[in-house]
Length: 128
Image (cartoon, rainbow, N blue to C red):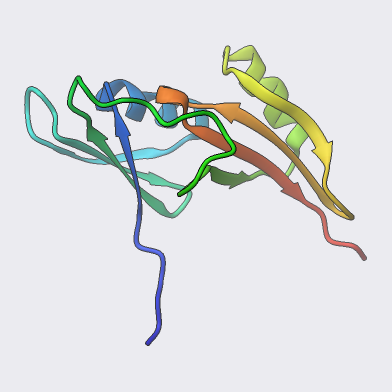
């Protein structure tokens, strides 16, 4: 059996607003809107990854802070983490952890998305 990534599925108290965050902040492309008013789901293309953002019922509780069980974060690779983090900070995106070195050629940082979603920004450099 062969497996391939199909999508990441998020839940949000405001799926339209959450989708706008990923579009405006990370250049995602809105692909589809399911349901009129209220929306049921927003579908995005985020750098080749399909992201479903489902409208959560009002009584849905947020996940606890990390560390946690289950899917912890989405990782987005960039060519220049310094420039990316400066841009995100200028946009008012909440930075959870600043840039740290995680080994030869790997630098990471974490920011917060809608509904407390944890998003890793990472830069991988080849060791020539």
